[in-house]
Amino acid sequence: MYKDYAGYTTEKLLEDDFFIESIQHPIPETELYWKKQIESGSLDSKEYRLAVHFLHIVKVKVKVLPEDSQSRLWEEINNTNNKLKHSKIRKFRIWGISAACITILIGLSIPFFLSDQTTDISIIASALKPDYSGNTVQLVLPNNRQILINEENSVIQHSSEGIITVNSKKIANEKVEVSKLVETDLEKEFNQLIVPYGKRSTLNLSDGSKLWLNAGSRIVYPIKFASDKREIFVDGEAYLEVFHDANRPFIVKTNQMDIKVLGTSFNVTAYKNDKLSSVVLVSGSVQIKVNDKQNTRLEPNKMFLFSEGVVQIKEVNVSDYTLWKEGLYSFDNESLTTILERLVRYYGKKIHYTPDIGTLKCSGKLDMQDNLEVVLDGLNISKQSLTLYNRIITEIYSFYKIYFHYR
Amino acid sequence: MLETECQDQVLWDLFLSGDDTAYSSIYKLYVQPLYSYGVQFTFDSGLVEDSIHDLFVKLYQNRKNLHTTDNIKLYLFAALKNQLFDIFKKNVSFSQIDTIEPVFVVDYTIEDEIIKDEQERLLIDKVIYMLEVLTPRQKEVIYYRYQERLSYDEICKIMGMNYQSIQNLLQRSFKKLRTTFSHLQLLSVSALGLIYYLHFLFLCE
Image (cartoon, rainbow over all chains, first blue to last red; front, top):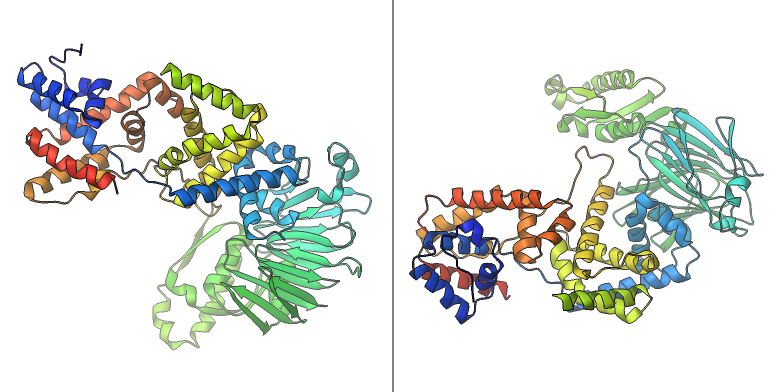
Protein backbone atom coordinates (compact mmCIF):
# COMPACT_ATOMS: atom_id res chain seq x y z
CA MET A 1 0.00 0.00 0.00
CA TYR A 2 2.47 2.60 1.16
CA LYS A 3 6.00 3.01 -0.12
CA ASP A 4 8.98 1.43 1.56
CA TYR A 5 11.02 4.17 3.19
CA ALA A 6 14.00 2.04 4.06
CA GLY A 7 17.21 4.01 4.12
CA TYR A 8 15.56 7.34 3.32
CA THR A 9 17.62 10.42 4.11
CA THR A 10 16.21 13.69 5.36
CA GLU A 11 16.52 15.15 1.87
CA LYS A 12 14.61 12.30 0.25
CA LEU A 13 11.88 12.50 2.83
CA LEU A 14 11.50 16.20 2.23
CA GLU A 15 10.89 15.49 -1.43
CA ASP A 16 8.22 12.96 -0.72
CA ASP A 17 4.62 14.19 -0.93
CA PHE A 18 3.24 11.51 1.37
CA PHE A 19 5.77 12.37 4.06
CA ILE A 20 4.99 16.08 3.79
CA GLU A 21 1.26 15.44 3.94
CA SER A 22 1.63 13.16 6.96
CA ILE A 23 3.48 15.73 9.00
CA GLN A 24 1.42 18.75 7.92
CA HIS A 25 -1.94 17.01 8.26
CA PRO A 26 -1.43 14.10 10.64
CA ILE A 27 -4.07 11.44 11.03
CA PRO A 28 -3.83 8.39 13.33
CA GLU A 29 -3.11 6.01 10.45
CA THR A 30 -0.17 7.94 9.09
CA GLU A 31 1.23 8.62 12.55
CA LEU A 32 1.18 4.89 13.24
CA TYR A 33 2.76 4.14 9.90
CA TRP A 34 5.77 6.36 10.47
CA LYS A 35 6.19 5.12 14.00
CA LYS A 36 6.38 1.56 12.65
CA GLN A 37 8.88 2.54 10.00
CA ILE A 38 11.25 3.88 12.67
CA GLU A 39 10.70 1.09 15.17
CA SER A 40 11.40 -1.57 12.56
CA GLY A 41 14.76 0.09 12.01
CA SER A 42 14.38 0.51 8.27
CA LEU A 43 14.03 4.27 8.59
CA ASP A 44 16.70 6.11 10.52
CA SER A 45 15.19 8.02 13.41
CA LYS A 46 17.64 10.94 13.18
CA GLU A 47 16.96 11.45 9.48
CA TYR A 48 13.25 11.38 10.16
CA ARG A 49 13.42 13.83 13.03
CA LEU A 50 15.53 16.28 11.08
CA ALA A 51 13.02 16.20 8.23
CA VAL A 52 10.11 16.79 10.60
CA HIS A 53 12.08 19.59 12.19
CA PHE A 54 12.59 21.26 8.84
CA LEU A 55 8.90 21.20 8.02
CA HIS A 56 8.07 22.86 11.30
CA ILE A 57 10.78 25.47 10.99
CA VAL A 58 9.65 26.67 7.59
CA LYS A 59 6.04 27.02 8.61
CA VAL A 60 4.90 30.54 7.85
CA LYS A 61 2.62 32.80 9.82
CA VAL A 62 -0.53 33.13 7.77
CA LYS A 63 -1.63 36.72 7.46
CA VAL A 64 -5.31 37.19 6.95
CA LEU A 65 -7.14 39.96 5.17
CA PRO A 66 -10.26 40.53 7.27
CA GLU A 67 -13.71 40.12 5.68
CA ASP A 68 -14.59 43.79 5.82
CA SER A 69 -11.32 44.71 4.13
CA GLN A 70 -12.03 42.16 1.43
CA SER A 71 -15.44 43.72 0.80
CA ARG A 72 -14.07 47.22 0.83
CA LEU A 73 -11.36 46.23 -1.64
CA TRP A 74 -13.95 44.65 -3.90
CA GLU A 75 -16.02 47.82 -3.84
CA GLU A 76 -12.97 49.83 -4.84
CA ILE A 77 -12.29 47.43 -7.69
CA ASN A 78 -15.85 47.81 -8.94
CA ASN A 79 -15.74 51.56 -8.66
CA THR A 80 -12.59 51.74 -10.69
CA ASN A 81 -14.00 49.42 -13.34
CA ASN A 82 -17.15 51.52 -13.58
CA LYS A 83 -15.26 54.78 -13.81
CA LEU A 84 -13.09 53.38 -16.54
CA LYS A 85 -16.15 52.30 -18.46
CA HIS A 86 -17.80 55.73 -18.35
CA SER A 87 -14.85 58.03 -18.43
CA LYS A 88 -13.78 59.61 -21.69
CA ILE A 89 -10.23 58.46 -21.18
CA ARG A 90 -9.64 56.09 -24.04
CA LYS A 91 -8.54 52.65 -23.00
CA PHE A 92 -5.82 52.49 -25.60
CA ARG A 93 -4.28 55.54 -24.08
CA ILE A 94 -3.97 53.82 -20.73
CA TRP A 95 -2.50 50.59 -22.00
CA GLY A 96 -0.46 52.24 -24.68
CA ILE A 97 1.95 53.66 -22.14
CA SER A 98 3.03 50.18 -21.23
CA ALA A 99 5.87 51.00 -18.89
CA ALA A 100 3.57 53.08 -16.76
CA CYS A 101 0.74 50.58 -16.89
CA ILE A 102 0.54 49.75 -13.23
CA THR A 103 1.11 53.22 -11.94
CA ILE A 104 -1.67 54.55 -14.10
CA LEU A 105 -4.07 52.27 -12.30
CA ILE A 106 -2.80 53.43 -8.96
CA GLY A 107 -3.11 57.01 -10.09
CA LEU A 108 -6.67 56.39 -11.17
CA SER A 109 -7.83 54.52 -8.12
CA ILE A 110 -6.83 56.97 -5.47
CA PRO A 111 -8.34 60.19 -6.87
CA PHE A 112 -11.64 58.46 -7.42
CA PHE A 113 -12.00 57.78 -3.77
CA LEU A 114 -10.85 61.15 -2.53
CA SER A 115 -13.21 63.45 -4.35
CA ASP A 116 -15.63 63.29 -7.20
CA GLN A 117 -14.64 66.77 -8.24
CA THR A 118 -11.19 65.74 -9.34
CA THR A 119 -11.01 66.75 -12.94
CA ASP A 120 -9.43 64.76 -15.66
CA ILE A 121 -6.15 66.68 -15.69
CA SER A 122 -5.20 65.67 -12.15
CA ILE A 123 -6.00 62.08 -12.96
CA ILE A 124 -3.97 62.19 -16.15
CA ALA A 125 -1.15 63.95 -14.35
CA SER A 126 -0.91 61.44 -11.55
CA ALA A 127 -1.19 58.66 -14.09
CA LEU A 128 1.67 59.92 -16.24
CA LYS A 129 4.48 59.09 -13.88
CA PRO A 130 7.47 60.94 -15.25
CA ASP A 131 10.96 59.59 -15.56
CA TYR A 132 13.26 62.23 -14.05
CA SER A 133 16.27 59.97 -14.08
CA GLY A 134 17.30 60.91 -17.58
CA ASN A 135 19.36 63.87 -18.54
CA THR A 136 17.08 65.24 -21.19
CA VAL A 137 14.07 67.45 -21.15
CA GLN A 138 11.18 65.44 -22.54
CA LEU A 139 8.10 66.70 -24.29
CA VAL A 140 5.56 63.91 -24.49
CA LEU A 141 2.78 64.38 -27.02
CA PRO A 142 -0.63 62.71 -26.68
CA ASN A 143 0.13 60.03 -29.22
CA ASN A 144 3.03 59.07 -26.97
CA ARG A 145 5.62 60.59 -29.24
CA GLN A 146 8.52 61.77 -27.15
CA ILE A 147 10.67 64.70 -28.09
CA LEU A 148 14.00 64.72 -26.28
CA ILE A 149 15.83 67.98 -25.75
CA ASN A 150 19.47 67.87 -24.70
CA GLU A 151 20.17 71.57 -24.18
CA GLU A 152 20.41 72.85 -20.65
CA ASN A 153 18.02 75.66 -21.44
CA SER A 154 15.26 75.27 -23.96
CA VAL A 155 12.36 77.24 -25.28
CA ILE A 156 9.28 75.38 -26.40
CA GLN A 157 6.76 77.39 -28.33
CA HIS A 158 3.19 76.48 -29.21
CA SER A 159 1.85 78.76 -31.86
CA SER A 160 -1.86 79.50 -32.09
CA GLU A 161 -1.97 77.47 -35.28
CA GLY A 162 -0.66 74.42 -33.46
CA ILE A 163 2.96 74.43 -34.63
CA ILE A 164 5.41 73.31 -31.97
CA THR A 165 8.92 74.72 -32.14
CA VAL A 166 11.82 73.89 -29.86
CA ASN A 167 14.63 76.46 -29.72
CA SER A 168 13.26 78.00 -32.88
CA LYS A 169 13.32 74.73 -34.78
CA LYS A 170 9.98 73.46 -35.94
CA ILE A 171 9.45 70.06 -34.34
CA ALA A 172 5.86 69.15 -34.88
CA ASN A 173 2.54 70.25 -36.16
CA GLU A 174 -0.12 69.51 -33.64
CA LYS A 175 -2.79 69.24 -36.27
CA VAL A 176 -0.83 66.48 -37.95
CA GLU A 177 -0.06 64.73 -34.68
CA VAL A 178 -3.63 64.71 -33.46
CA SER A 179 -5.07 63.58 -36.73
CA LYS A 180 -3.40 60.28 -35.96
CA LEU A 181 -5.43 59.99 -32.79
CA VAL A 182 -8.88 58.46 -32.58
CA GLU A 183 -10.15 60.99 -30.09
CA THR A 184 -10.84 64.30 -31.76
CA ASP A 185 -11.67 66.26 -28.65
CA LEU A 186 -8.45 68.27 -28.40
CA GLU A 187 -9.33 69.57 -24.97
CA LYS A 188 -8.92 66.03 -23.71
CA GLU A 189 -5.51 65.50 -25.25
CA PHE A 190 -2.54 66.38 -23.11
CA ASN A 191 1.12 67.12 -23.53
CA GLN A 192 3.62 66.57 -20.77
CA LEU A 193 6.85 68.49 -20.43
CA ILE A 194 9.38 66.90 -18.08
CA VAL A 195 12.38 68.87 -16.90
CA PRO A 196 14.89 66.71 -15.05
CA TYR A 197 17.47 67.83 -12.49
CA GLY A 198 20.08 70.05 -13.99
CA LYS A 199 17.89 71.47 -16.73
CA ARG A 200 15.47 74.34 -17.22
CA SER A 201 12.85 75.08 -19.81
CA THR A 202 10.64 77.87 -21.03
CA LEU A 203 7.22 77.03 -22.37
CA ASN A 204 5.15 79.42 -24.45
CA LEU A 205 1.57 78.29 -24.65
CA SER A 206 -0.78 78.86 -27.54
CA ASP A 207 -2.83 81.42 -25.60
CA GLY A 208 0.19 83.64 -25.12
CA SER A 209 0.99 82.61 -21.55
CA LYS A 210 4.62 81.99 -20.70
CA LEU A 211 6.02 79.52 -18.23
CA TRP A 212 9.53 79.03 -16.89
CA LEU A 213 10.09 75.56 -15.50
CA ASN A 214 12.79 74.89 -12.94
CA ALA A 215 14.80 71.69 -12.59
CA GLY A 216 13.00 68.59 -11.44
CA SER A 217 9.60 69.80 -12.62
CA ARG A 218 6.91 68.76 -15.00
CA ILE A 219 3.81 70.26 -16.47
CA VAL A 220 0.77 68.60 -18.03
CA TYR A 221 -1.32 70.77 -20.32
CA PRO A 222 -3.97 70.23 -22.97
CA ILE A 223 -3.33 70.76 -26.66
CA LYS A 224 -6.28 73.10 -26.73
CA PHE A 225 -7.66 74.97 -23.80
CA ALA A 226 -11.35 74.65 -23.02
CA SER A 227 -13.69 77.51 -23.83
CA ASP A 228 -14.44 78.35 -20.22
CA LYS A 229 -11.11 77.79 -18.52
CA ARG A 230 -7.41 77.19 -19.09
CA GLU A 231 -6.18 74.41 -16.84
CA ILE A 232 -2.70 72.96 -16.39
CA PHE A 233 -1.00 70.73 -13.85
CA VAL A 234 2.37 71.53 -12.33
CA ASP A 235 4.65 69.39 -10.20
CA GLY A 236 7.83 71.22 -9.21
CA GLU A 237 8.55 74.89 -9.66
CA ALA A 238 7.30 77.22 -12.34
CA TYR A 239 7.14 80.94 -12.93
CA LEU A 240 4.11 81.99 -14.93
CA GLU A 241 3.18 85.06 -16.90
CA VAL A 242 -0.45 84.42 -17.65
CA PHE A 243 -2.02 86.12 -20.65
CA HIS A 244 -5.05 88.06 -19.59
CA ASP A 245 -8.34 86.52 -20.72
CA ALA A 246 -11.39 87.51 -18.69
CA ASN A 247 -13.49 84.75 -20.22
CA ARG A 248 -11.10 81.99 -19.37
CA PRO A 249 -9.55 81.91 -15.90
CA PHE A 250 -6.18 80.21 -15.82
CA ILE A 251 -6.00 77.44 -13.23
CA VAL A 252 -2.79 75.82 -12.08
CA LYS A 253 -3.37 72.55 -10.32
CA THR A 254 -0.66 71.05 -8.14
CA ASN A 255 -0.59 68.09 -5.83
CA GLN A 256 -2.47 69.98 -3.17
CA MET A 257 -3.34 73.44 -4.48
CA ASP A 258 -5.57 74.95 -7.12
CA ILE A 259 -4.38 78.41 -8.17
CA LYS A 260 -6.83 80.48 -10.16
CA VAL A 261 -5.71 83.58 -12.05
CA LEU A 262 -7.08 85.91 -14.66
CA GLY A 263 -3.90 87.43 -15.97
CA THR A 264 -0.94 87.85 -13.78
CA SER A 265 2.65 86.89 -12.95
CA PHE A 266 3.45 84.54 -10.16
CA ASN A 267 5.77 81.79 -8.99
CA VAL A 268 4.54 78.43 -7.77
CA THR A 269 6.62 75.88 -5.90
CA ALA A 270 4.96 72.54 -5.40
CA TYR A 271 7.35 69.63 -5.60
CA LYS A 272 5.44 66.43 -5.03
CA ASN A 273 8.05 65.02 -2.66
CA ASP A 274 8.39 68.19 -0.61
CA LYS A 275 6.10 68.95 2.28
CA LEU A 276 6.15 72.66 1.57
CA SER A 277 4.20 74.26 -1.27
CA SER A 278 4.23 77.95 -2.00
CA VAL A 279 2.96 80.64 -4.31
CA VAL A 280 4.58 84.05 -4.70
CA LEU A 281 2.62 86.74 -6.49
CA VAL A 282 4.51 89.35 -8.50
CA SER A 283 1.61 91.24 -10.02
CA GLY A 284 -2.14 90.84 -10.48
CA SER A 285 -4.15 88.61 -8.21
CA VAL A 286 -4.65 84.92 -7.62
CA GLN A 287 -7.05 82.78 -5.71
CA ILE A 288 -5.67 79.69 -4.01
CA LYS A 289 -7.60 76.67 -2.87
CA VAL A 290 -5.87 73.94 -0.86
CA ASN A 291 -7.19 70.37 -0.96
CA ASP A 292 -10.60 71.65 -2.06
CA LYS A 293 -11.00 73.75 1.05
CA GLN A 294 -10.83 77.43 1.81
CA ASN A 295 -10.25 80.00 -0.91
CA THR A 296 -7.46 82.46 -0.19
CA ARG A 297 -6.87 85.60 -2.21
CA LEU A 298 -3.23 86.55 -2.57
CA GLU A 299 -1.87 90.04 -3.16
CA PRO A 300 1.28 91.11 -4.97
CA ASN A 301 4.56 90.83 -3.07
CA LYS A 302 3.01 88.26 -0.82
CA MET A 303 3.89 84.62 -0.40
CA PHE A 304 1.41 81.86 0.33
CA LEU A 305 2.95 78.93 2.19
CA PHE A 306 1.34 75.60 2.78
CA SER A 307 2.98 72.84 4.76
CA GLU A 308 1.45 69.89 6.59
CA GLY A 309 -1.97 71.44 6.90
CA VAL A 310 -0.81 74.88 7.95
CA VAL A 311 -1.29 77.97 5.77
CA GLN A 312 0.90 81.04 6.14
CA ILE A 313 0.94 84.31 4.27
CA LYS A 314 3.87 86.65 4.51
CA GLU A 315 5.38 89.63 2.76
CA VAL A 316 8.43 88.86 0.74
CA ASN A 317 10.88 90.31 -1.66
CA VAL A 318 9.57 88.62 -4.78
CA SER A 319 12.84 88.72 -6.67
CA ASP A 320 14.26 86.29 -4.13
CA TYR A 321 11.82 83.71 -5.43
CA THR A 322 11.70 84.51 -9.09
CA LEU A 323 15.28 85.27 -10.08
CA TRP A 324 15.98 81.57 -10.67
CA LYS A 325 14.52 81.94 -14.12
CA GLU A 326 17.26 84.44 -14.90
CA GLY A 327 19.77 82.02 -13.51
CA LEU A 328 20.21 84.00 -10.34
CA TYR A 329 19.51 82.75 -6.90
CA SER A 330 18.93 85.32 -4.26
CA PHE A 331 18.37 84.40 -0.63
CA ASP A 332 17.97 86.18 2.66
CA ASN A 333 18.69 84.41 5.93
CA GLU A 334 18.07 81.05 4.36
CA SER A 335 19.35 77.84 5.91
CA LEU A 336 22.30 76.31 4.14
CA THR A 337 20.44 73.06 3.71
CA THR A 338 17.72 74.77 1.69
CA ILE A 339 20.28 76.56 -0.44
CA LEU A 340 22.29 73.44 -1.11
CA GLU A 341 19.23 71.36 -1.92
CA ARG A 342 18.20 73.96 -4.46
CA LEU A 343 21.63 73.79 -6.03
CA VAL A 344 21.41 70.01 -6.15
CA ARG A 345 18.20 70.31 -8.15
CA TYR A 346 19.42 73.09 -10.36
CA TYR A 347 22.72 71.48 -11.30
CA GLY A 348 21.61 67.89 -11.14
CA LYS A 349 24.68 66.95 -9.13
CA LYS A 350 25.03 65.62 -5.63
CA ILE A 351 26.49 67.77 -2.90
CA HIS A 352 27.70 66.28 0.37
CA TYR A 353 28.03 68.26 3.52
CA THR A 354 28.23 67.55 7.19
CA PRO A 355 24.74 67.92 8.70
CA ASP A 356 25.84 70.37 11.37
CA ILE A 357 26.45 73.16 8.90
CA GLY A 358 23.03 72.69 7.33
CA THR A 359 21.42 74.97 9.84
CA LEU A 360 23.74 77.88 9.14
CA LYS A 361 21.85 80.87 7.82
CA CYS A 362 23.14 82.68 4.77
CA SER A 363 22.21 85.70 2.74
CA GLY A 364 23.37 86.66 -0.69
CA LYS A 365 23.04 86.09 -4.38
CA LEU A 366 24.49 83.37 -6.55
CA ASP A 367 24.87 83.50 -10.28
CA MET A 368 23.95 80.03 -11.40
CA GLN A 369 25.22 80.52 -14.93
CA ASP A 370 28.54 79.62 -13.38
CA ASN A 371 29.75 76.10 -12.79
CA LEU A 372 28.79 74.54 -9.53
CA GLU A 373 32.36 74.79 -8.22
CA VAL A 374 32.38 78.54 -8.63
CA VAL A 375 29.02 78.79 -6.96
CA LEU A 376 30.08 76.72 -4.00
CA ASP A 377 33.24 78.76 -3.69
CA GLY A 378 31.05 81.80 -3.47
CA LEU A 379 29.12 80.15 -0.70
CA ASN A 380 32.29 79.56 1.27
CA ILE A 381 33.05 83.24 1.16
CA SER A 382 29.62 84.33 2.20
CA LYS A 383 29.68 81.84 5.01
CA GLN A 384 32.97 83.15 6.29
CA SER A 385 31.58 86.63 6.54
CA LEU A 386 28.74 85.15 8.48
CA THR A 387 31.08 83.69 11.07
CA LEU A 388 32.11 87.17 12.02
CA TYR A 389 28.64 87.63 13.35
CA ASN A 390 28.35 84.27 14.93
CA ARG A 391 30.96 83.87 17.62
CA ILE A 392 29.76 80.41 18.61
CA ILE A 393 30.72 78.70 15.45
CA THR A 394 33.84 80.64 14.54
CA GLU A 395 36.31 78.19 16.00
CA ILE A 396 34.57 75.02 14.93
CA TYR A 397 33.99 76.40 11.48
CA SER A 398 37.36 75.56 10.04
CA PHE A 399 36.61 71.88 10.43
CA TYR A 400 33.49 72.01 8.31
CA LYS A 401 33.90 71.22 4.70
CA ILE A 402 31.69 71.11 1.71
CA TYR A 403 32.74 68.78 -0.99
CA PHE A 404 30.85 67.46 -3.93
CA HIS A 405 31.04 64.63 -6.33
CA TYR A 406 29.57 64.15 -9.72
CA ARG A 407 26.78 61.68 -10.18
CA MET B 1 -6.55 16.90 -9.71
CA LEU B 2 -8.02 16.76 -13.17
CA GLU B 3 -11.30 17.87 -11.69
CA THR B 4 -9.96 21.11 -10.27
CA GLU B 5 -8.25 21.83 -13.57
CA CYS B 6 -11.54 21.39 -15.34
CA GLN B 7 -13.31 23.61 -12.85
CA ASP B 8 -10.65 26.29 -13.17
CA GLN B 9 -10.86 26.22 -16.95
CA VAL B 10 -14.64 26.56 -16.91
CA LEU B 11 -14.67 29.37 -14.40
CA TRP B 12 -11.90 31.26 -16.11
CA ASP B 13 -13.40 30.90 -19.57
CA LEU B 14 -16.71 32.16 -18.22
CA PHE B 15 -14.95 35.19 -16.84
CA LEU B 16 -13.13 35.81 -20.14
CA SER B 17 -16.42 35.70 -21.98
CA GLY B 18 -17.74 38.55 -19.85
CA ASP B 19 -19.56 36.78 -17.05
CA ASP B 20 -19.51 39.15 -14.06
CA THR B 21 -20.52 36.47 -11.58
CA ALA B 22 -17.50 34.43 -12.58
CA TYR B 23 -15.31 37.51 -12.06
CA SER B 24 -16.69 38.02 -8.59
CA SER B 25 -16.33 34.31 -7.77
CA ILE B 26 -12.70 34.40 -8.76
CA TYR B 27 -12.17 37.36 -6.47
CA LYS B 28 -13.92 35.69 -3.53
CA LEU B 29 -11.97 32.48 -4.01
CA TYR B 30 -8.55 33.99 -4.39
CA VAL B 31 -8.38 37.31 -2.57
CA GLN B 32 -7.30 35.70 0.70
CA PRO B 33 -4.60 33.40 -0.78
CA LEU B 34 -3.35 36.30 -2.90
CA TYR B 35 -3.13 38.53 0.13
CA SER B 36 -1.32 35.92 2.22
CA TYR B 37 1.10 35.46 -0.66
CA GLY B 38 1.60 39.13 -1.41
CA VAL B 39 2.56 40.00 2.16
CA GLN B 40 5.50 37.64 1.87
CA PHE B 41 7.10 40.21 -0.40
CA THR B 42 6.53 43.33 1.63
CA PHE B 43 5.57 44.46 5.09
CA ASP B 44 3.36 47.10 3.56
CA SER B 45 -0.12 45.63 3.78
CA GLY B 46 -1.65 48.59 1.94
CA LEU B 47 0.67 48.04 -0.97
CA VAL B 48 -0.49 44.44 -1.27
CA GLU B 49 -4.12 45.55 -1.22
CA ASP B 50 -3.39 48.17 -3.88
CA SER B 51 -1.69 45.53 -6.00
CA ILE B 52 -4.66 43.21 -5.72
CA HIS B 53 -6.91 46.11 -6.69
CA ASP B 54 -4.80 46.93 -9.72
CA LEU B 55 -4.55 43.29 -10.68
CA PHE B 56 -8.28 42.73 -10.68
CA VAL B 57 -9.01 45.96 -12.54
CA LYS B 58 -6.40 45.04 -15.12
CA LEU B 59 -7.93 41.56 -15.51
CA TYR B 60 -11.38 43.02 -16.00
CA GLN B 61 -10.34 45.71 -18.43
CA ASN B 62 -8.22 43.33 -20.46
CA ARG B 63 -10.31 40.17 -20.33
CA LYS B 64 -10.86 40.04 -24.06
CA ASN B 65 -7.13 39.69 -24.61
CA LEU B 66 -6.16 37.32 -21.81
CA HIS B 67 -4.96 33.76 -22.27
CA THR B 68 -7.05 30.91 -21.00
CA THR B 69 -5.79 28.80 -18.11
CA ASP B 70 -6.60 25.66 -16.17
CA ASN B 71 -4.74 26.85 -13.09
CA ILE B 72 -6.22 30.09 -11.84
CA LYS B 73 -4.24 30.15 -8.60
CA LEU B 74 -0.90 29.96 -10.36
CA TYR B 75 -1.97 32.50 -12.96
CA LEU B 76 -3.05 35.00 -10.32
CA PHE B 77 -0.01 34.39 -8.14
CA ALA B 78 2.36 35.00 -11.02
CA ALA B 79 0.41 38.12 -12.04
CA LEU B 80 0.48 39.49 -8.51
CA LYS B 81 4.21 38.89 -8.21
CA ASN B 82 4.80 40.82 -11.45
CA GLN B 83 2.53 43.59 -10.25
CA LEU B 84 4.43 43.98 -7.00
CA PHE B 85 7.78 44.03 -8.77
CA ASP B 86 6.55 46.69 -11.21
CA ILE B 87 5.23 48.89 -8.41
CA PHE B 88 8.52 48.64 -6.58
CA LYS B 89 10.42 49.65 -9.68
CA LYS B 90 8.18 52.66 -10.24
CA ASN B 91 8.28 53.84 -6.67
CA VAL B 92 12.02 54.20 -6.62
CA SER B 93 12.46 57.94 -6.52
CA PHE B 94 15.16 59.57 -8.53
CA SER B 95 17.15 60.53 -5.49
CA GLN B 96 17.78 56.98 -4.38
CA ILE B 97 20.97 55.39 -5.48
CA ASP B 98 20.18 51.75 -4.85
CA THR B 99 17.43 49.88 -6.60
CA ILE B 100 14.84 48.39 -4.38
CA GLU B 101 13.33 45.06 -5.24
CA PRO B 102 10.78 43.24 -3.20
CA VAL B 103 12.40 40.30 -1.46
CA PHE B 104 10.77 37.46 0.28
CA VAL B 105 10.48 38.59 3.88
CA VAL B 106 8.73 35.73 5.56
CA ASP B 107 7.53 35.68 9.14
CA TYR B 108 8.00 32.19 10.45
CA THR B 109 5.88 30.80 13.25
CA ILE B 110 8.97 29.92 15.25
CA GLU B 111 9.30 33.59 16.16
CA ASP B 112 6.31 33.30 18.46
CA GLU B 113 7.88 30.50 20.41
CA ILE B 114 7.89 30.84 24.20
CA ILE B 115 11.23 29.75 25.54
CA LYS B 116 10.81 27.39 28.49
CA ASP B 117 14.31 26.37 29.28
CA GLU B 118 17.91 26.49 28.17
CA GLN B 119 17.63 23.48 25.93
CA GLU B 120 14.73 25.03 24.07
CA ARG B 121 16.60 28.32 23.89
CA LEU B 122 19.50 26.56 22.20
CA LEU B 123 17.19 24.87 19.77
CA ILE B 124 15.33 28.06 18.87
CA ASP B 125 18.57 29.99 18.41
CA LYS B 126 19.74 27.39 15.94
CA VAL B 127 16.47 27.54 14.10
CA ILE B 128 16.57 31.32 13.85
CA TYR B 129 20.13 31.11 12.62
CA MET B 130 19.19 28.67 9.92
CA LEU B 131 16.32 30.83 8.76
CA GLU B 132 18.62 33.80 8.59
CA VAL B 133 21.13 32.09 6.37
CA LEU B 134 18.51 31.07 3.86
CA THR B 135 18.53 33.41 0.89
CA PRO B 136 15.31 35.14 -0.21
CA ARG B 137 15.18 32.88 -3.27
CA GLN B 138 15.52 29.80 -1.12
CA LYS B 139 12.81 31.08 1.18
CA GLU B 140 10.62 31.70 -1.82
CA VAL B 141 11.03 28.16 -3.19
CA ILE B 142 10.45 26.69 0.26
CA TYR B 143 7.30 28.79 0.55
CA TYR B 144 5.93 27.51 -2.75
CA ARG B 145 6.88 23.90 -2.05
CA TYR B 146 5.91 23.53 1.59
CA GLN B 147 3.43 26.26 2.37
CA GLU B 148 1.52 26.52 -0.89
CA ARG B 149 2.26 22.91 -1.91
CA LEU B 150 2.83 23.82 -5.53
CA SER B 151 4.18 21.22 -7.91
CA TYR B 152 7.72 21.53 -9.26
CA ASP B 153 6.25 22.46 -12.61
CA GLU B 154 4.23 25.26 -11.05
CA ILE B 155 7.23 26.51 -9.09
CA CYS B 156 9.32 26.60 -12.26
CA LYS B 157 6.66 28.72 -13.95
CA ILE B 158 6.21 31.23 -11.17
CA MET B 159 9.89 31.67 -10.50
CA GLY B 160 10.87 31.61 -14.14
CA MET B 161 13.55 29.03 -13.51
CA ASN B 162 14.15 25.51 -14.74
CA TYR B 163 13.71 22.34 -12.74
CA GLN B 164 17.41 21.93 -12.02
CA SER B 165 17.75 25.44 -10.60
CA ILE B 166 14.76 24.87 -8.34
CA GLN B 167 16.27 21.61 -7.16
CA ASN B 168 19.57 23.34 -6.45
CA LEU B 169 17.84 25.95 -4.31
CA LEU B 170 16.10 23.25 -2.31
CA GLN B 171 19.19 21.10 -1.90
CA ARG B 172 21.20 24.04 -0.67
CA SER B 173 18.51 24.76 1.90
CA PHE B 174 18.63 21.15 3.09
CA LYS B 175 22.39 21.44 3.38
CA LYS B 176 22.00 24.45 5.62
CA LEU B 177 19.57 22.46 7.70
CA ARG B 178 22.14 19.71 8.16
CA THR B 179 25.05 21.95 9.03
CA THR B 180 23.00 24.01 11.47
CA PHE B 181 21.82 20.97 13.39
CA SER B 182 24.76 18.66 12.95
CA HIS B 183 26.03 19.01 16.50
CA LEU B 184 22.80 19.57 18.29
CA GLN B 185 21.13 16.70 20.00
CA LEU B 186 17.65 16.69 18.64
CA LEU B 187 15.00 16.15 21.26
CA SER B 188 13.01 12.97 21.21
CA VAL B 189 10.06 12.82 18.88
CA SER B 190 7.55 13.24 21.66
CA ALA B 191 9.22 16.33 23.08
CA LEU B 192 9.32 17.75 19.55
CA GLY B 193 5.63 17.06 19.35
CA LEU B 194 4.99 19.27 22.38
CA ILE B 195 6.88 22.25 20.99
CA TYR B 196 5.13 22.03 17.68
CA TYR B 197 1.76 21.70 19.27
CA LEU B 198 2.41 25.19 20.59
CA HIS B 199 3.03 26.31 17.02
CA PHE B 200 -0.42 25.19 16.03
CA LEU B 201 -1.83 27.26 18.86
CA PHE B 202 -0.17 30.38 17.51
CA LEU B 203 -1.33 29.61 14.00
CA CYS B 204 -5.00 29.67 14.90
CA GLU B 205 -5.06 33.22 16.29
